Length: 226
Image (cartoon, rainbow, N blue to C red; front, side, top):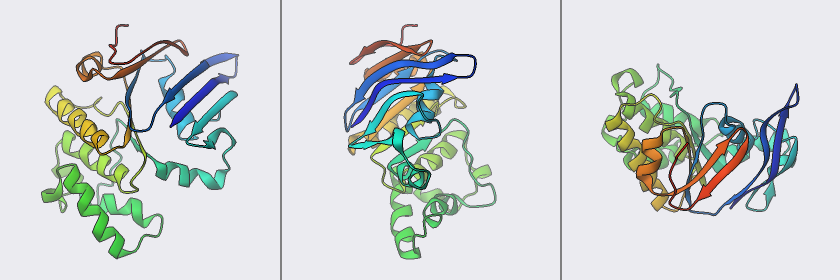
């Protein structure tokens, strides 16, 4: 469960990027957070992964108040939240298997664990037959699948996808959204942050709309109407 409780983030000049925002996302939900550029979506994302600390309010994940998080605890938090961004940030000199493995190597996972988990997540995202390819040999949609696989290796409770289809055509966009729905069916909470009206409206899932730092709509099976 994720709970934003009266969260405000104020930057110099008394600019409220997020202003008194409250909402709850239950475990296993698929929620889209939408809004135009500058609405406050990025600040919400950064707050959820403890890249930014709210000026006021609390963010609770399960029973953990991450607004009080210690710097040493941030890596653990980010293993609970798989993050997928618009830019792939794959290592060009490593194969897809090696790119995904790298996330486990960074926390000291042994080869046995790596060789067990990585093929599983590559199969989930449909890249099990391209594990030995390099990023440049894959399409944009396949590269994003690799990024999702990398986000899944820690078996996170939450998958946060920030504009994951921003660089993709309509066909690859549909494939990535279908993959996120599949991951959600496994029980993972999925938060999709986007300004893509068509994607959100086709999902027919819960939509939280943010405008000028405030929530202006929160509807189950909603639409993006701004």
